[in-house]
Amino acid sequence: MTLESKPFPLRPAWLEIDLARLRRNLQLMRRDLPPGTRLLAVVKDEAYGHGALDVARVAVEEGAWGLGLSTLEEAMALRDGGITAPLLLLGERQESELEWCVDHHLTVCLNHPETALALARIAAARGKKVPVHVKIHTGMTRYGVRWDEALPLLKVVADCKSLELEGVMTHFSQSDETDKSFAHLQFARFQEVLKSMQACGISTRMRHVCNSGGFLDLPSMHLDMVRTGILMYGIFPSQVCRRIEGIEPVMSVKARVAALQILKPGEVVGYGMRYTASSLRKVAVIPIGYGDGFPRVRNEGAVLLHGHRAPIIGGIAMDALMVDVTDIPNVAMWDEVVVMGRQGGLEISARDIAGLKRSVTYDVLTSWRLRLRHRHVGKVPPAFQSRLGPI
Image (cartoon, rainbow, N blue to C red):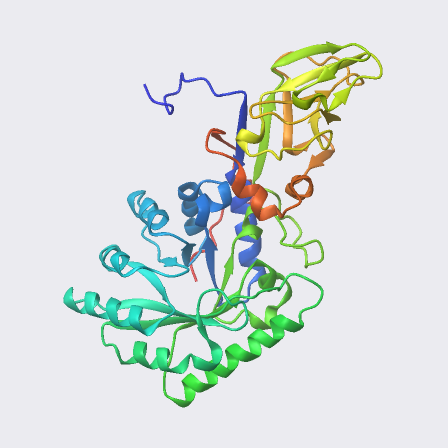
């Protein structure tokens, strides 16, 4: 028996992934793009915790040109799962990884001439011409060759007969806040590189700079392709960036009431005795904790139960959190609880959880642990049955 067998009981705490919402989000994003602008769906880190293979399949069906990943292992998992679309490996590659990239049709981001030459030798030995993208560092100071030192690397790539300069790219440090001045400076630096390439007769098929924030707020910089991550999962990258009506969160976190306790005045809850009852209280125990990725807070936050907010009391344990349900009628064992998501007219968003963590929504999505198994829900809405087709 395996965990995938149908009779195996689902733990009373789980991630709910609505692939119909994902599909709708992608379609709305595609409709928002100008004709001819490709979309790269970023599915690194298990598609921000949503399940890379499932997300990749939907993204390709909805016309994504390719998929963005971080590690060789992530790319191989998609290839093993039958994904044949272009896979762009972001970041840097060790030389030992390059043979795998060539043999499995993975597209490498190049940051150094040494990597370009090593990849060219391997491709030539196999009689292949492999596509590559050169990363330009325009101010992020992470991966990439500096914009004012990029031309020698671009010439190396252009001169290698076994390499095809398919793309040239950069990445914004800040594109989703009100102040876009640094993004404009980065774009100007990127354009300097493009002009230098043109002067030297070096061409490329794809120029791409925009992440989700750039996609939303910098339409003049869409160029040939945009790279979207968090937006397609229904989370806007900031509270001030442009909204696309209809975009909704794909992930919810749910659980069931696993115990009910009566707390008498003066009694305490949980490790460290961080909550003491001032009156008679009813407490529900929810079997999810910091071992699942919930922030280890004390007397902060809430869950949704029967359409009400139930405040968290005491400290979060590895496998449990406790909530006060005194004022919520008819709470019973195994009632469904929303830890992140919507119930009735209320919502606990990823941004709310990020506030508890003193972090960001990206961290929240990717921090839920594997022991929270995925449950897929939702049907494709009839109005969104038609495919837009790849561009």
